[in-house]
Length: 420
Image (cartoon, rainbow, N blue to C red; front, side):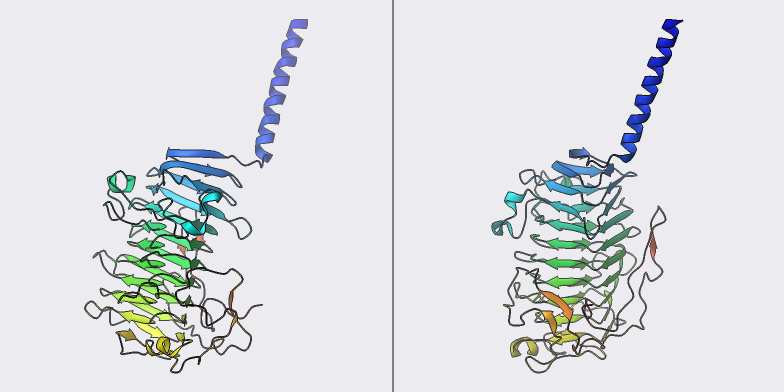
């Protein structure tokens, strides 16, 4: 009998221990730090640090979810690529963003244009990719024969290519990038070969060593692009093209974006602010161009779709040389209905809260103290238009039922209104 009771006591203790362990797991908020190489899926836990020691692959049919506050450290020797054959979701918050970066000692001015890891490369099998409150920095390495992306036939499928921060290639897939920061990349920040796309409330700065665009869209892309800030891009803020002959025809609706000193570090025909080519259809509203090289410019040999619309865009130039190259009809520059195009240096000042308009136009470095909100007496506050259609007003719905909608347009020009 004593032996029987002893067994009951032991059994009860085991059950109690098991229930305590489960309870502890349920309430445990300690980060699950780790390292990754090869195939990954599942969840990277809130606040954890993940060290990426080599190329990782999210398998087709599987997903990786990255919770708020996760820091992903990319090995600067291996220069990993993130291959997304399944789905990827990075869910940061304003207070605790997700961060793709490198070890702190390597975050130096000498590495200003990255090249120290690859990028996020989403294969045509990737159905959904979401980056919300996510920072990507110091990437854009150059491919070689040994690169996983080259071996798999992804991106441009050849060695010697500078990788973008994001490549997406499923014309039926969904790509949402919002409240995110792209900085310190060697060339393009994004290169999009199709998809249903929302890019909103993002920042792009200190990118592009010898070339590169902030947002580069090709055929198959239906995109709403709004409230993005692009500063000092080597080439264009927006490169809009229907190249690739994918269906549907590329149709980009870009509104309420702010572009400052873009294009000056690549003084070629394409370097500027917005480049149009290859029958792309583009509707551009309420965009603010300040000291940019050109404004909206077309490829005269392969112009845009004649249904494209340009309206209520604002232009400012600190010097006359900048003002002169804004004028429609010169250098294949495009003007639109109700565009506010400066004629004289210094006119049309949008009155940013804090930005010296005489800052060098080849300046790539970004000062976080700058503030591109509009002052309360800015003439640009009531120059926007809102009566146009956008692709995803009613939203893109993910497999889990989450809906992402493109933001409503504003009555002001640019990405930021008056500071509240």
